[in-house]
Image 1 (tube, one colour):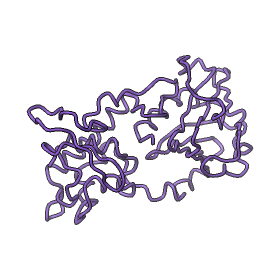
Image 2 (cartoon, rainbow, N blue to C red):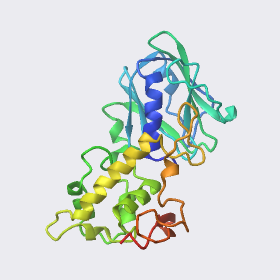
Image 3 (cartoon, rainbow, N blue to C red):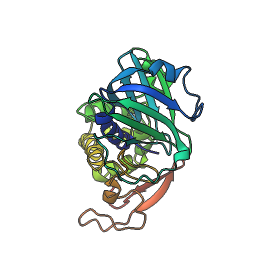
Image 4 (cartoon, rainbow, N blue to C red):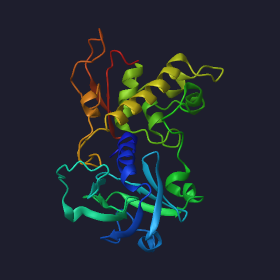
Length: 293
């Protein structure tokens, strides 16, 4: 499933094409994806200008000048691509089957050029919902989300109250979307390796008795921010279905230190350990038992 860096990469790829454009027609080729489309969705957005694109956790948010926000989740296999646009189009061959093109945004850009943004989803596990901007964060999908793992807000001071007194494994705490929004399996594994912390370690051990973060808690916050930033810079990780909006692949998977590296030697200098795979809460965890404690 695409994680935060992949969704942020999509947002950045779509922004030059969609921001400021008029949505002349929203073509829905089926009545639903994972869930039915909102009632009269195409009618309410026809002829409306797109003012901006944003992201919350793993959700792409498209803002319109009539006050509505359309929120898109890519599910397991969803992707966007652009066509017939001089902005952002790289004319790559798209290995997407057109039968899985379920939503098409027909746009008139600010330079009067026509463009299409196509949502393709073979498994149809993605979904879209919409509401007025002042109500959108009350939606059940968004209302319980925690702190964004980007920017200076994520710090040891922010993590300490989340972890205090918790006997849950560190990896489970980091994957709790009510605590930190948008972190997924891949980047948690990578951040823990960079931090030298075991995914099995109790989360509460990173908090001092006075409630302050330990030095290792501060380091973990920094590594989470940098691994997310590195992945965004690389265009995300093109595992299975994910590609960028111009059809090219992200490259962060070539930098994986532990994820999907079972049996490989640890990359840390002088470690000498071997990457192991264990299962936590039904999901694969990759780590080095030698240097991650």
